[in-house]
Image (cartoon, rainbow, N blue to C red):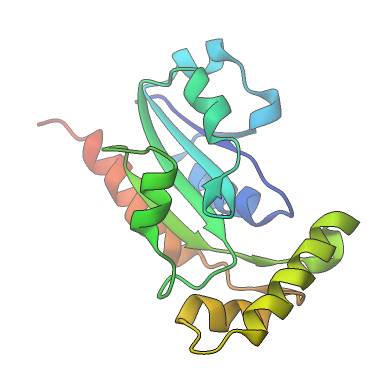
Length: 170
């Protein structure tokens, strides 16, 4: 089975996951910027990874326009997996029945541009002031504006199992 991993990465965490996935599936990982419709059509399974901001998966709209046949989507965010709302992410990104996997990444605050850093500092202050914070808001109040790395190969395992299961002879 021909597979291709396509990714859009902001600060490197999504790229790292894409490389781990491609290595495990013995296929190529390609930045979305270098991906063409012809490349997509040549593969039976396309695994797309994008980073999350505001629960929106960056690059997903572009890969969807390329009409991949059998698409799998993973998204990398800074929120820990035990408090992220994957149902909301799936709904907001109109994923329907598309297999979706969330993978915690991290934050490289120093690599962000000035406007993004400023916006995140405002969000952090806003979350910190809020009374009766939910787990997501508490996390934002503590973590935004800092650098950290929660990425781990183990988070690729459910996606890998799904891809391999779907390619098994029935």
